[in-house]
Image 1 (cartoon, rainbow, N blue to C red):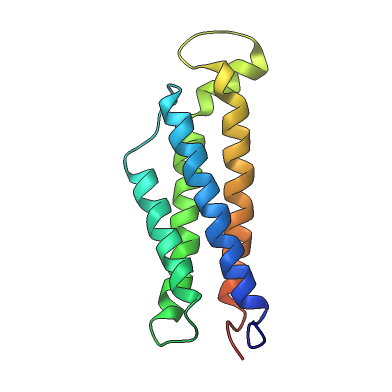
Image 2: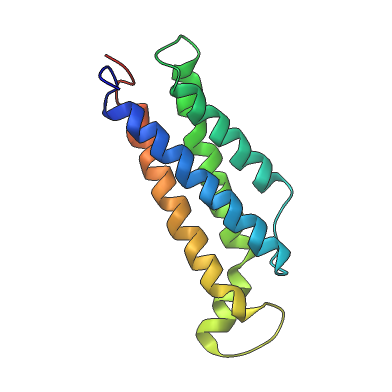
Amino acid sequence: MKNKTFGFFSAALTAILTLVTLVVVLVYGSNGGQVSTLVPVALVAAVACEVSLLFGEKIWTDFTGILAAPLLAFTMMTVLSDGIWNIAEAVNGIKMVGMPELAGMNYALAGLNLAAIITAIITCFTQKSK
């Protein structure tokens, strides 16, 4: 742990936030929320990218670190666009095609995913080992 830097801990935090996001997405989908099949795949790929950064500075880790942020951004935009009716119906109090009871999970997914995106971007610009 002595030779670990801020970038290492940022990558670990991103991996943890992404795993939590994956769990919330799976729970959201099991409760009836609309989840594209590419969303869990993108989240697993983002976790793999961030975990690869934990093994130190390698030639390929520059690319995996950069790849995690767009994967997380894709996940966020897909989940928000698929759940927009849940949020709209919860705000307006009208029940039409969405599930307003899932709007809270949409907010949680957006918050978790945004935090993971920010930490992934920070990780791209930091050194992972001394």
